[in-house]
Length: 141
Image (tube, rainbow, N blue to C red):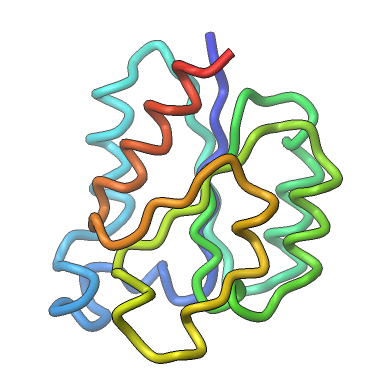
């Protein structure tokens, strides 16, 4: 059974409430049930934190023993060299996901410290981006 870690960064605990015109009206915990139903053969670990160090700790904890990481680091995408270094340090392949099209938003959102450490990046496809990332990681050997 493949194991995938989904990591969500700051403010993503507010999905369903936060700017629904950008992020939609569905909570991530509700959407996670959809992903788990679509991939019953995959053990999905989910973690969300508003704290950079906690995200890094999860990458360290799971990054050598799982088959892939899906990460939406939120604003840390644009600021955290430490998260990028953590992704470089582990062996699990990573896919970066963003719910909104960050390239159609403020200029500071156009740069990611994480992208170069990832197998791929999915932006602007809403919550479906997570499903696509899991599908990629499950099908990759």
